[in-house]
Structures are given as C-alpha cells and as structure tokens.
Image (cartoon, rainbow, N blue to C red; front, side, top):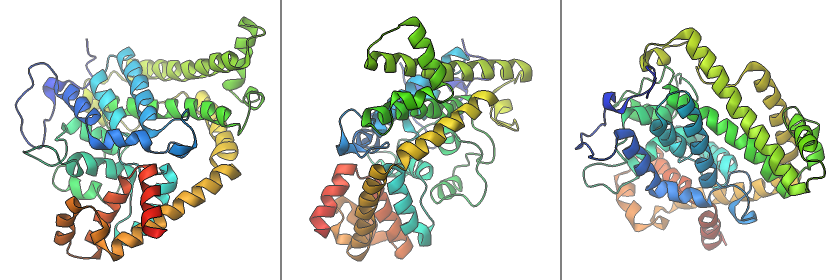
Length: 378
C-alpha cells in the first residue's frame, strides 16, 4: 500500500516518447530495468569510488556503491510507504555521469570544460539517459519517465540558474521543474547515498590502513557502536568486531532517517506528491544531532582518507591522465572511435567538439583511460 504522498506509476507524467504499456511491469520498474541494462551502468564496475579501480579488489567501485545505495533506498522507501521501484531507479542512476577516477576526474574535466559550459556529473547522468545511450530504434537515451528524470536531475535539491550544461539544454525542451524539490522517493535516494558512503568509506579506509579501529572509537556514532559490541561480545576477534560495529553505524543512520521522516510526514500531512515538491525544504533527512555527528566523521575522513598523502599522489597521477588525454582528442578527433565520427562531423564549433570529447572521456573506465593514455601519450 502506497502512502498518499508516494509516487504512483499509474499517475506518472509519462515519457517524452510514448510507448506501449508493459504487461508485467510498472513504468518505474521498466525505468529501473533499463538503467541496469545500460552500457553506462555496466561501466561503473571499473570506475573509482575513492580508491582507483586497480588498487584492490575489495574496495568499493561506483557499481558496488550504487547497488548499496539502491538497497538502502528500498529499505527507507518501503518503511515510509513510498514507491520502492522509483527510489531504486534513481539510486541506481545517480552516479551514471561520473568520470573515471571519481571526483578527481570530474575536477579535471570541469577545468578543461570551463570555457565550454563546464562539466557536472549529475547533468552528465541526465545526458546519458536522454541522449548518449543509443540502443533503441525509436529514440536516443532510455526514454525514462518524467519522475525518474526529475529524480536524477535534482535528488540533491532544487537547482538555480545558471544551470549546468546538459541540464539547461534538456530542460529547455522537457521541463523537469528544476526549481522545486524532487519526489520523496528521489530524496530517499539522496539520503541513501549519504548513508552508503559514510558506511563504506569507513570500511574501505580501515581496510586500506589509512586509519585503524582505535581512531574510530574516538569519534561520535562509531565510538558508541564499538563500545556496544565490546559489551555484548567481549574478546571478539578484530574483523568480526569491526563488522559488528560498522553495521550498527549503518543501522543507526537508516533508523534515524526513517524516524525523522515519519515524524515530519505526520506533522505536515502532505496530501500528495506535489505537496512534497512544494515544501520549503526536504522531507527526508537526518536529525540535527546525527547530522552534526556525521559532519565530524566526514571531517575525519577528509583529513585521514580523502587527503591522505598516498591518495593525493594517486589523484595527481590520474588527474594528469585525463588532462593529457583531453587535448589529444581535441587536436585530432580522428582518434575517437569510428562510431563517434558522425557526431564530430556535425560539430559546428570548438565548444560542440569539446562536448563530444567530454562525453567520450567521461564514459571511460579507470583502466581504459589509463590504457588509452599509455597508447596515445606514451
């Protein structure tokens, strides 16, 4: 049973290109399935989360991160009476636009694209699902529903002008109402992203040796979790102790989001999904005390993990890969694969060519970017 403020696929605003209704799946289920079967989703397997893909088989990639976000989103959405299929679809698609090498690659590409409208991974995700996936006979992209596109574009909140390139371009022909909040399902996907990376970055950081369990025992949320495990399981071996503590951190975040959302929904009593969109703030969020505790954890991760000397050295190396690849393709677009040559021929100016090169480079996996750099730059 869906809550009155849940997104109902039977009342979807539909797709840009009309299609026959599926016999067995709702529109949001079809969106989810198309995302899973897309080329861009498969490539997430070899794209950086924090550690570059070749640094270890046990670290998260963009693919495993997206799967974890989808699991959290389904749990929260189900507990709140929301549409779990839409929440899952947005969660699975939220990182499709990421470049190789994570935020390091995005920073490099944004710098090189600054004279040509910039680069933003959320805008690139929308560009992928509306244009760059070219498999269907009747349309470019995946022809997702309005609700899923809205969630991809603004799951982190309303967008103000100037809009990133890609979002502005698409919104001009298919209005996603970017100045309002997204559905509750999309907001769930955004919070699920925070839950997933707060949890797994702690786990990956411990595995990498950048910090240890004693460091986490001194932090809010994680410290009480370790203390509870020690009380319940005295003498537990190190790896089981770590897992038990971090799963409690994970659970605390999910339970906090559900409790806060239930309270806010009961107090505000939104009559429908449009009432959710018109609120002056997100309906799905952490409590203020937990939010402050998570800020402390993020500060710790920033110092000890994201800006660790070994991580920064690798970031510098992979940033150089993209900063040297991009101008090579700009100088000689013939280096692009044959299937991109028609787009290059249609490019009217340098900015149009730069956007094509950015689309190609952003779609690379970590390993392919490194291989191409070695082949072309030596």
